Image (cartoon, rainbow, N blue to C red; front, side, top):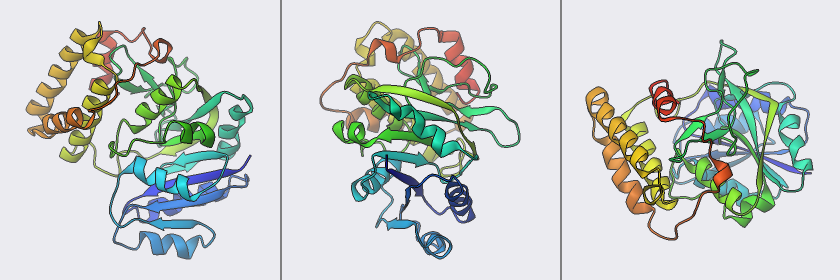
Length: 305
């Protein structure tokens, strides 16, 4: 099984170098690709100096996470695509553990487990969805030994995809610049009959929030765009949970107006809804976790999912 390891970066400085150092120490043969999203600084030259065997793709403009991954996927030929955030530092043995579930023929995607620095708590262990298709990091801020919820698929921060499955469904949707692209891909893979697996021993420490700034207007816009895009593409407002979805959306928008004092999240939702024009898809019933109640959903929203 051949592997293309893909790291998307933007003005990351030393951060991406630490990521590549840990990746190089994994002891698993792989081809590493760094996609520089038009940083316009020393990021790409620094990677070439420190890691001459790494293939660097310098894009002319910042196309976002999913489109950058797609570019590296087209350039590579590995049987498996491994995605590692540029602010993720893999623990020993993580890459081997991430590949192991592909021994099952219909596994198309595998989720690794990321932790919050200095805490031992989980940042994310793949993605779970509530009945409105709102996405949450599994085991967020809990112990890795706790029982996780229903796995939809991996988070793009530490993930692996079978190339055949990835190409079959067309890879990431370029319209999703950041946020939600991994949710959408996992749903399309599930619709196509591919299964998701979890690799609890595939671990990395994740700094998190480094690209756009936590709760910045840009982050709010992109998160709003993704939410509206997914709601329209998968017909959330045409289903029996439309009332709950609208209630949560109203609360999120109100909180953004009061606390963030910005309309970015509203503009993002309008743009995302418009961008999702086209063929509707239906999420598989087993892709959601029905045990995430409205109360639990609101609690998670208050605590960054």
